[in-house]
Length: 261
Image 1 (cartoon, rainbow, N blue to C red):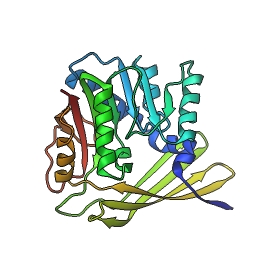
Image 2 (spheres, rainbow, N blue to C red):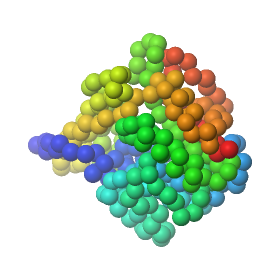
Image 3 (cartoon, rainbow, N blue to C red):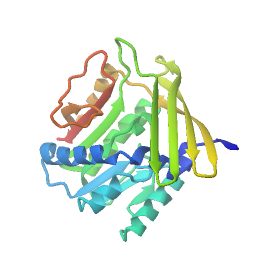
């Protein structure tokens, strides 16, 4: 029998973490390579805004020996993340906070936001506020690695994505699709269905979310409002260091490597 739940994926951090944490290695390797190639300072402290369950923070702390921290609005995700650090005998590193309005106790050398969490910021004011906060928290020469889907102005756009992840006897299948796109209001309304399978149960979670849209021109305009940052490289979601991209009218996946001037 299937249990149907209408709720927020972020309130189920165990399932969220399995979905987005199973393929951490490519992003992890890419981040370390970016720190080495593009930063003009030695990267010792790393910050992640909207860090969720800390799927990459824990790896950067355990495997790379970095001092990490982050924030997220969802209290359950923060609790999950800090429990993970405690289990690894590390101090709590994450706090509940708004990524568009925050300060840090100690400046960081690098930061990242790689899976569209930035697009949860629904207004230009919030987006600018976020970038200003990130710049303020970074040391000079430090990096902010920001990955988002742009809205292409030529050709077809990606309208759905699906993932399958498994850990032990737990399997999670996910499908996300665009339900409505309003370019005038700059909002994409998404549907999300998560199927969770254990040997004895099947849970189906239905969720929706809204993302702010960005064309290449709109993203360029936004970055121009935060002159503290310079764009030093553009990559895509394949996370391959040797592939430097240029944004074309049909480009969707972009990782902006920003450096504080």
